[in-house]
Length: 75
Image (cartoon, rainbow, N blue to C red; front, side, top):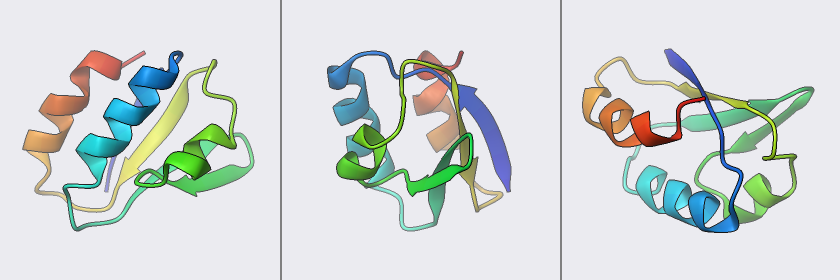
């Protein structure tokens, strides 16, 4: 499992983030406080407070390409 902290302050960033994560077939989740949502779900992401840094957990060790795409969101 890989983990990183990101920031998605704009609605357009959330949409872009979901489009990126949907192209991967392994599990990716977002953790914000006590909440855990599917990172591929735009409704799930809009149900949490994205104005604060959130944690992304990627359940695949071979995810260097995804990590590279998510660098622009790192907090």
